[in-house]
Length: 342
Ligand code: SF4
View 1 (spheres, helix red, strand yellow):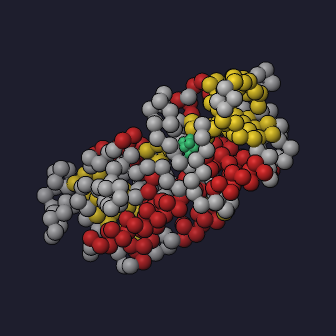
View 2 (cartoon, rainbow, N blue to C red):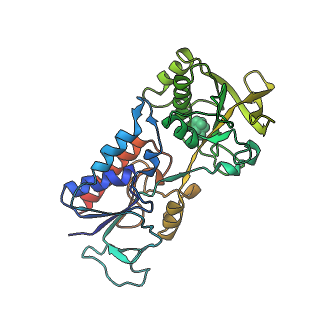
View 3 (cartoon, rainbow, N blue to C red):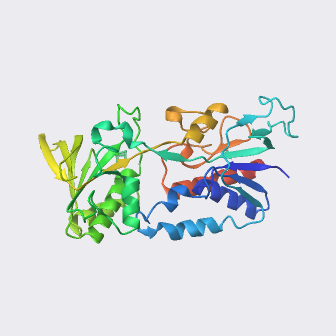
């Protein structure tokens, strides 16, 4: 029986592990955090149908209840090398390199180490970590989940401003790519904010809204027509603090070509997705590190779950920004590729 390791117990890793295990293949699933699915359990609702993220996480977590799956949480993989590079001589019968994962050997490895949110401190001009009214989209998600959206002095905010493309499509942060999910996430959070605080004014500053998925455009319309969310095409160049803990924003309305100033209780920065540290380090070690530190597949069209290294597969947001459903589907595709190889 071939030994299979999956690195990362996010949606892609869990889906692949579950499928392989259900067909009788033992899988060891490594996770550096204390629990799987860290990037779902910190969400409130999922777009476009506002499904409860915690319920989805429970359903996914249940997929690990299979005796063929060994889940190793709190286990960071720091070494991923073909054994012949790592100093071992072993090769399996097909001549595929046996992979060394930390100190153990596997025939097949699936890299599913996911993404990390952009660190908003890097955009100093937006005041994150300096002014208490400036939050990231992750912090906003937590406030929505706890039904406790508050300003810096603990009151209900009267105005909330969302800013798109923080750390994505941005020369200064070095990320030229679009993170794909933050437009729809801002619309979702704007709707949730209005549901919880109907009298609060909500503004979304965008470069252009990328509502590409099924049901996304309808959400955008609903946000405007049913919830009165205001969308302004423009960039915020600077955020500062006011004496009463609010946030002063300097922006430009790029449709009207006019500079503008606005004061808001909260400024929410829609942070993009970057390759996680684990993705960068492990992809570099096994020489499949592509642009921006994401893992590179063999071919984005025909072999997107394979890599150039024999026996090494890739799935989920370690390759590029992906939605939850994309990641789950990609995990399934990777499992299929692995099964085909066995
Ligand atoms: S999805 Fe929207 S907010 Fe996110 S990077 Fe792309 S354009 Fe910007």
